[in-house]
Length: 284
Ligand code: FAD
Image (tube, rainbow, N blue to C red; front, side, top):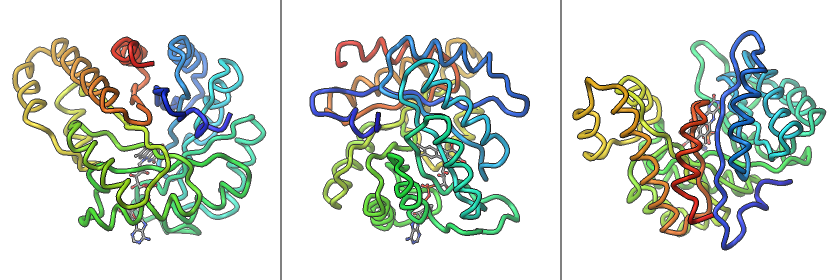
């Protein structure tokens, strides 16, 4: 099923992100995680790929195939083009097609040290290539702007270019502040970005994890989050519980505001997906 079809008025699609195992295929472990997520009836499950797309791209296909074929849940395979040639991309699309995966999140990927740009500069250059092959294509959106782009207006213009290139839905980078997420939604609509936007939410689980995230994607930390981090600094279990509870409150708040969809970065932890599904039970 093309994933854009799940964003219909009056429904609140909840979806999950998983990452494939690195190195040796640990598919039995991935199968257990995906099985637990599938039991929560998500609208789709997205499967990340490593920067550069080389390292674990076979695992992305394998896990996306599991999602789609073994559990009958629409799979959204991430595909990055940084450093890839047109032939590389054609081969990856063939592999997805052969596996029966028809939905792709088309991404540039983060710059790799020493990597040349190869055939694609931006995600907007990849999107039409993927769409031409018959895939339903989604793209990434950044509620606080992309980390490399200091001008929020330019960030919105780049997002609109992805829609114009053929992206049929958007999934956002994590954001810890609902006011910021909703202000972005309004700005995007004012900038003629009309495709459905699913908001990505990631619970904080530790101070290290959150500082890595903040410095890789430029998300800001509201004082409520900083206070929770300070309060539970020396109690990892309570910090994790507070992070999941905060994420669930965010999800409920965005559902209440009537967003198109919600996407949970599960970090392969079914308990996060379960908590999210419970928090949203009365909205789905
Ligand atoms: P683009 O849209 O190409 O943007 C990249 C930069 O170029 C931005 O700063 C943008 O403002 C700028 N830009 C775009 N168009 C123009 C233009 N016309 N002129 C000038 N500047 C322009 N990474 C992975 O490696 N694997 C994953 O699986 C993965 N999954 C992700 C899932 C989601 C939902 C999100 C939000 C991000 C994900 N990422 C992943 C991270 C993503 O690859 C990085 O954020 C990357 O740096 C940008 O990718 P993009 O597709 O948004 O790029």
